[in-house]
Length: 88
Image 1 (tube, one colour):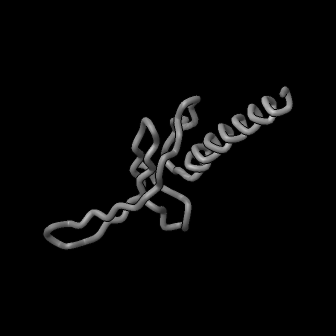
Image 2 (spheres, helix red, strand yellow):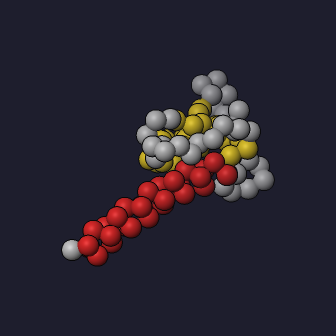
């Protein structure tokens, strides 16, 4: 009945809020990125690491990739610590 429909609607709204919270968490962890990541339809798909190897010196540069449904963001971990990323 009505209670079941209301419960389903509340669960849907909570799920949407959680998806936006994940995007907001990425937003607050970025340094040097002044645009707003949170939009009505943007969803965080995956966070992963990428290592770029220089073919001459074999130096390794690690970056973090944030994959959204409509955007890929490339950032480096800051020396200050975990969960802070520098966007250049």
